[in-house]
Length: 130
Image (cartoon, rainbow, N blue to C red; front, side, top):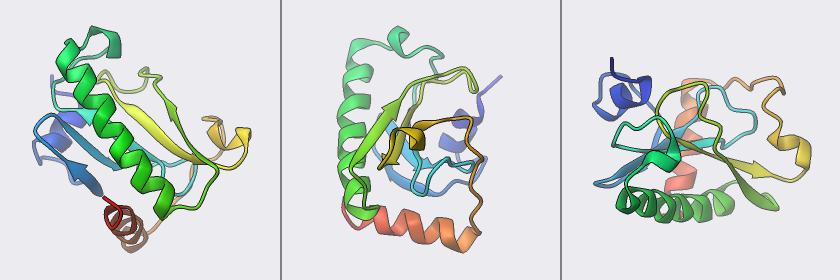
């Protein structure tokens, strides 16, 4: 069965897309731990990041860097942290988390909620810097 991310990639489930290329897609996390929390996902559905073919792994990380640099400009922060946990969805993905304090990267923090308009505005702000 296709993962929720594969369904997003195929357009079956909507998302707040940041960027996309032949190999990867990035979109806002709909249960963010901070404003701007973004996911970067390879289009190839592979559960564990280190099982990705080398070329897709490389594309994923170069794409992630591009999105992270835009994210840092759009959402003022000291750093954009990355996390690869991979337990909640069986499809490789990288979390990009705008961070000012170490506790910003705590996945047990309460999740934020934004309106659809706010999500669209955040996505558009990040896209301006791509």
